[in-house]
Image (cartoon, rainbow, N blue to C red; front, side, top):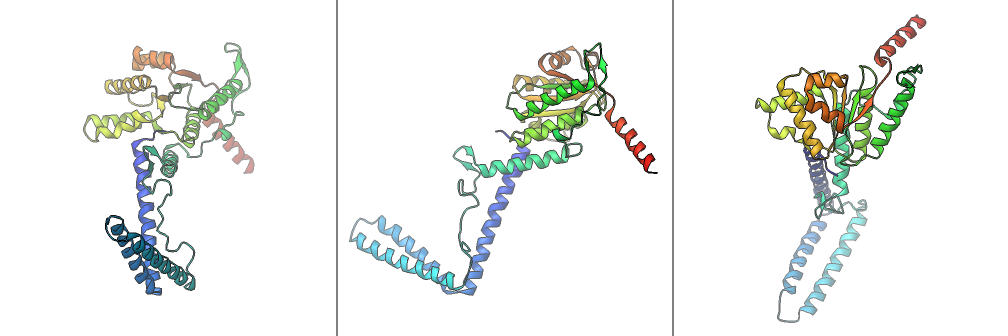
Length: 335
């Protein structure tokens, strides 16, 4: 699975740190053991010397090398037995002087051939979660915490359903989308008034998709366009936008709250169009309806969002306002 360059670079840095830490630990153990039992240093030097002798004998084409090799093996075995006896006598823990790599599969390189090793993949997953935890609104968004009780259960004749029933369907769909996410999944447009849970559900999707090992980038529309403007005015390198293009899932929150300019419209078109062409999934949340989208961003962008994205409509009362009212009422009762 592909990870963004930011996540991958951090994971690689952590793997290098793990290798350096393990090497430093080994050298510290070795120095302590040599100080405790100086004979160990002599044995290790003799073993390294005999290894060189064996290599030299294998390349010789004259004399009785078989007898000399047998003699060297016997000497090596005697030295190794003495070494083990000293370690046991010194009561050093098992493996105290093992010079094993940080990962037995890849040797600490992070790759087995051209395939990413599980050790590096796990570090990528951890870095992906850490990055999202810092970007998400609360860092604690979970589908299990999504409450349907705050949505009115009254029936809307013009819609043929209630807000609670509609949001139950939305919740089920988002959970399925996140659980079954694969590269090339369909893009989503969350549309509805403010305070109806769009940001919360998009954050839930981001968290679960990341936990599934996929690369996810989450940004508010303001942050996204600010980054694009920084590149335009040469305050940042073009490489800084790479994660927005390459991630398997890009989530843009609160589209329509930014100050809309010709540059913003052009940047949005480039993002939406290029990711559709590259079959990369995007989830966009907005308070704008269909007419507002076209009026603000033009027909080309609106047609792509409404035609190529699955539109998920949000209905109900302002959840944040309702929660504030309930908290006020609870405090009043206690007083």
